[in-house]
Length: 152
Image 1 (cartoon, rainbow, N blue to C red):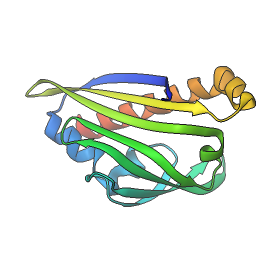
Image 2 (tube, rainbow, N blue to C red):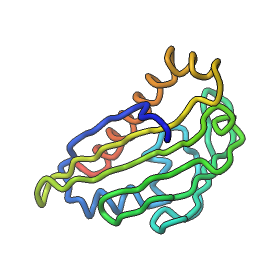
Image 3 (cartoon, helix red, strand yellow):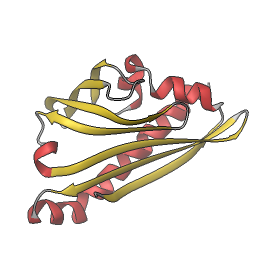
């Protein structure tokens, strides 16, 4: 099993149903996830596939992910199927998770977690030195983007 590498959470002043609608809307993914230019596929059905056109520091590529756990209005868990940016060569057992916890009718706690195993010793060192921190920053931006879109 992969190790938890990054975890962020944020309370959003919106009902869980609205948060859920946003995190499962393929057309909104580029506004939520930094680096995603365009996304196609399915984000609201178990074993659904999404493909994201990505850009990271000027490098463009694609990432295809499968939705391996799905509990409406509570949980999504994605894993990398293939990519052209090298992530699947560097990381194994990937799991990118969203958990929603209803606080009340107007507030939802959103938890974003990333699990993976570095594929080799060099990647393990890179993970300690920078990748975990970078993943945490990306998760923070994702949560803040969700908050900004929902708390209008």
